[in-house]
Amino acid sequence: MFQRYFTLIVLAAMALGVLVGWRLHETQPEARWEEVAGYFQIVTDIFLRLIKMIIAPLVLSTLIVGIAHMGGTGALGRVGVRTLFWFILASIASLCLGLAMVHVLQPGIGLNLPLPPENAESGIAAASVNLKDFITHLVPKSIFEAMANNEILQIVVFSAFFGVALAAMGEHAKPVVDMAERVSHVMLRVTGYVMMFAPFAVFAAIASTVTKYGLEVLGTYVNFIGGFYLALLILWAVLLIAGLLFVGPRVFSLVGFIREPVLLAFSTASSEAAYPKTFEQLQRFGASRRIAGFVLPLGYSFNLDGSMMYCTFATLFIAQVYGIELSVAQQVTMLLLLMVTSKGMAGVPRASLVVIAATLATFNIPEAGLLLILAVDHFLDMGRSATNVVGNSVATAVVAKWEKELGPARADVPVGGGPPLEAPGDMEVGR
Image (cartoon, rainbow, N blue to C red):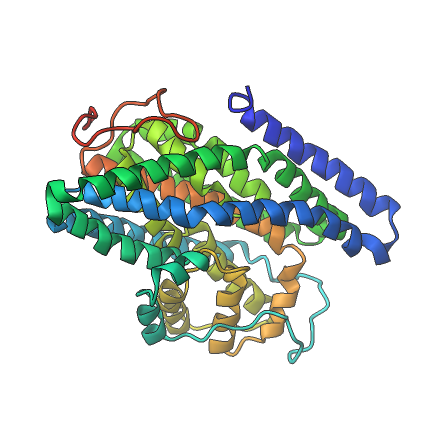
């Protein structure tokens, strides 16, 4: 019953959250808005902690099993290259679309907002742009440390080595592969339990935000918020059309399969919260478990399309508000810079703002400009989190099609565990 009406329950929780938040914002004195919002935030924080609790073991177990079933380094290399190729194309499209839309719409021109002092503190520390540190950080010092910190990319690197070693050992490694498979089913069952708390987290997240800021803040930034969501809708269309070229008309049915994780990511403003549900629904769509278990974790570090588009859109919005014009060369440099600094954003609190802070500093745009978007960042984070889910889902479907591991839609994928979802080679593929 809960699974069948999950979408409606979440929508109802969102609507109730708006009503309760608006009522509290109107009836409580301004001095208490943040305090009251904090009480709701407790529920959201607990839910996100539960999600973080299951992400690392779920990614580790499913990825090890997927790589072990690929049959060797040749297949792994082929899938990896195809996946990264798609991610790079999607990243370029996202960054360029954000750049183009902010030029067309010019949401920062004529915005009558009081400019903060150029030396004002935004409260967001700018990340240092260092390619050496980024590459070094890919390799974990300890898999236990990587799991404790939910470093998805480091878990992917360890899982690749471990999975390849298992594949090379053949039958001798079968007990270990079977154990990893059983662990993944246990984690999917735990995921089912955690998802039962999702509507409460959705209600609390929306109520907290509206209580703190009210609905009036949306009117002040109507051009900025409206322009960004228009850009997101265009990005969705671009991703689906690109998927159509490789997957065919079935890509449009993918939207129906992922509506629950998209709604969950939107309402909680967290792509990570939707990971387990996305993984389950992609298998229902027909993607093989090993492809979904490989592409999806990589996507959470390399393919955050909504977040990347926001970086260019917000950076140039702040520049427009301050009346700063960037040359074509500077804008191209900014795109290349964001291609690197936007990777590995998953799991970092307010990661997009951190990347934007670094970009502003690089191009001598006052970092205090972040104060202009902080008030509405949560509303924008909702849209970009949902878009990240769409982008990674399309990427998984495309790679599965390339690998001839995209079968018909399935109704037998267990919710939260059960028997193995498929045995290697047994699934109908290529459709």
